[in-house]
Length: 295
Image 1 (spheres, rainbow, N blue to C red):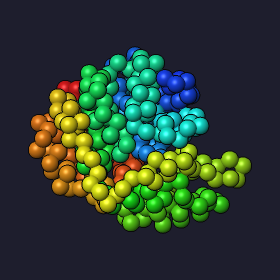
Image 2 (tube, rainbow, N blue to C red; image 1 turned 180 degrees about the vertical axis):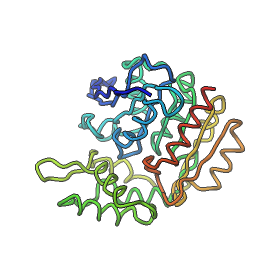
Image 3 (tube, helix red, strand yellow; image 1 turned 90 degrees about the vertical axis):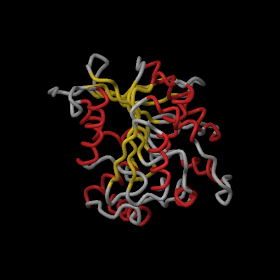
C-alpha cells in the first residue's frame, strides 16, 4: 500500500482542439498495469473515484496508475458547440488522443455502458492497447427497452432545489433498477449526477446529449456489435451485469461466454443499469480479476 495517493486533474486537447479532462490517480512509475476508466453516456470520471482510489492504492496486489476520462460535454471537459460531435467515433478518437498525451501505451479498460462500447470499438481498431477488459453492464446487444428508458430522462430531468430533492429525483427515476441502495448510496448517486453552484443544481453533462437519442427508431432491431466484442477474444474479459438490468440481457451474457474463451461474469445484486461500482463486493471482484490477469 502507498501512504499518500497523488490525484490530479489533467486538461488535454482533443484532435479538434476541444479541451478535455481526465482524473489521474497515481503515476506512470507504479508497477501495475494502468487502468483506463470510461464512463456511461451522461456520466463522468467522478463515477470511478472510489474504485480508482482502491485500485491505485494496491487492491489488486500492487499499486497502479488509474486514469478516468470525461468525454466531451461531460464533467470538466468543455461542451461542444456542435452536439452532433457527441458520437462514438469522435469520442473514441478523443480517448485515444488522451491516452497518447498521458503516455498510457496500454491499459486494462474498465468501461461502464458507453465506455464498454468504446472498449469493444478499440478492440477492433487498436487492439494492442487493451491488456484486459471489464465491461460494466454492456454487451454486443443492447435491449431497446433499456435504451427507451434512458432516452426518457437524459436531458429532461427537472432541476432539483436541494440535495434532498436530488435524492428524491434519483429514486423516482432509478428506484426500479436499484432496489438495495442505502441512503448514503442514493446521496452519492445524486452528487455524481448533479453539481451545485451557488444554490443552483445542474446536470454534470450537456443536456443536448438528448438529441443524440431522439432520432433512434427503437421499434426496429438495433445493430449488434458481435465482431467488435469478438475482438476482445485475445484478452481476459470480465462482464458485470446488474441483476435488474434492462440494457444487458442474461441471454446476451450467456452468448458472450460462448464466443469468448477467457470470459468471466459477475452479477451485482439489487442493482440495474449500470452498477455504481461503489460496493465492496463488486470492487473486490474487479480487483481479483485484475490480479489473475497479471499473474
